[in-house]
Image 1 (cartoon, rainbow, N blue to C red):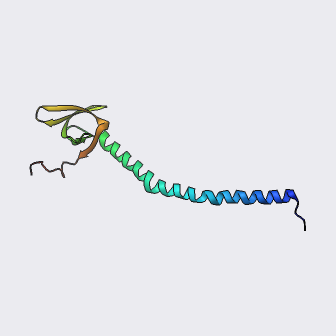
Image 2: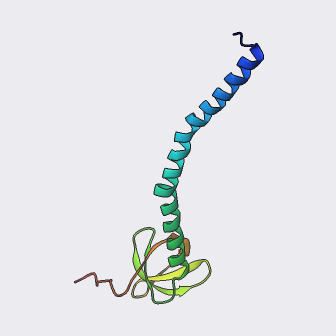
Image 3: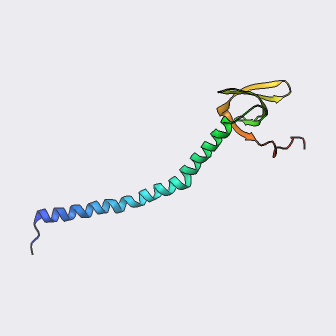
Length: 111
């Protein structure tokens, strides 16, 4: 039985198309695993952090990007005035605040 060149090309073309799918499947699977194990949790954490920083209000205790801990005295859209010590106030950009400390769990520094 003779195979014509046209028939051989179509059979070979179908095999290479399936071969590409088989080769791409592990890469797609790896991307899906990375998305659910790394990318998605990081996005959720960033969203929660942004919500906490946007909800900062007067009287909250915060940690700045430089590691300074202080009490928020005044808040506006972009800035927060933070009192680090009596009569020592700094103006911090709200996006540079790294954490809002829960007053129930906060301990005084000298205890």
